[in-house]
Image (tube, rainbow, N blue to C red; front, side, top):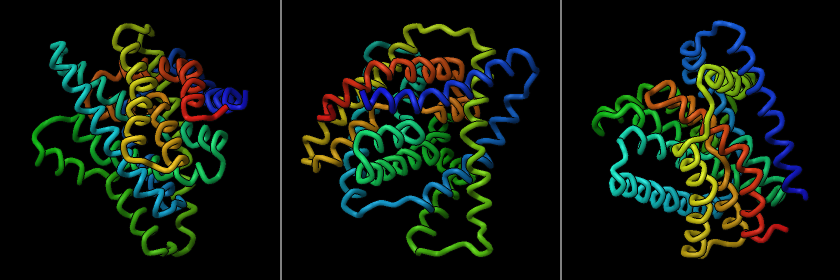
Length: 300
């Protein structure tokens, strides 16, 4: 089955790097705090700037997916928040479920799957989704995790290089400007280090965290892999999105918990161990759920 091949080709290299980090974490004393700060304040901003600057998208794809993405994740946010209050979950548990549910792996996994399942036209629209997800994750995520009032959260976000990397990338894209002296190649080189360092850090965190799939990890995986694509499917029907935009919205919404969710939780607050286990659990469970989602959107 072609989509299973895409899953294997995407998850295999990721699993190898995470395992390397796990072995390193067991055998060597590593300063995970320094690695996390290096990634958040230097490597990921470079990756975001490079991704935004090089992205290609269409105006109609941008508008439809932006509306679909916003409505999908607003409904997820309100639903999980309401369920947390209904079942009287501890605030930290509700926050953890929100982080896992609202931050999909729409980059390295989502883009690969979309390209294989829907071709180049699908990939162009998947990049739009990835940019929207990046804005939400890195623009709003740190303030949400850190807590505090709205003003404090906004001021905190404005101090992060992630935010300015997004703005600069959008500015360069909108104006069509090319950086002098091929500086964009240097930015790309730094950004390319983000994913492997991120995955190694995840593996090291896993080495320090007893791995188990409990109620939290199972719930987080179900919300990310099942509820999110079902909500996206309903939103696409409600908005009357064109077939390709609808398929991309659902498929990108069906990806596992983003590794960046673990990174942000570790750096800005929350239970990094739970989120790390949820990243791994949801990634493995995606082998079962994504084929069902592809069938749902008409990919045989």
